[in-house]
Amino acid sequence: MAAARDRLVTANPAEVVLTSRGSATTQRVLAGASIIGAAALGVAIALSDLPWWGIALAELGVLVVVLIMMAIGASASDNARETTALRATGRTVVADVLDSEAQDDGETTSHRLTLWIPVDGGFEVGHWCHHYGGEQQLQVLVDPATRVWGVMH
Image: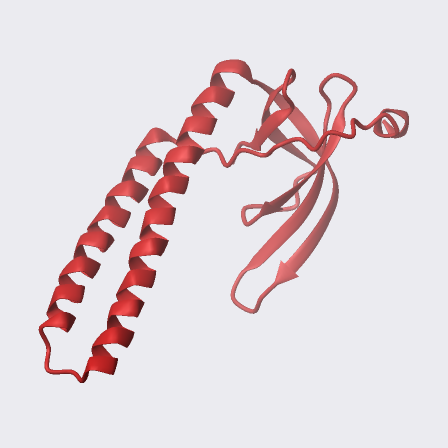
């Protein structure tokens, strides 16, 4: 396997966050509901007796919430679209976990994994994972032609 690792392709393979249609729909619905709630809050703030600068600051906060919710809805759609495309062209392989580095932020532990995907000579990729339990191999969905991949959790 070491000889195969020496033949790494210089192109950076793209990771897809595997997302089901149902999960993406749920994310979009929750983001939409949050936007509607923020808009109602914005109207209530505008009609309140706050000083002008208080209204301006509160409305700025509402705008930030709306922009974040719009980004969440858009990324869910993109992830679902990329997942559908990868499922159409990809195949499941078993990737070896070459290295795992735990990152503990005090509340959760995530792992920076280095994976070896054995497709067309193989290639090495990095993956942040909150689901890692010490496995030496993980199932990966990969498109051999484009080297687009996603870890199957």
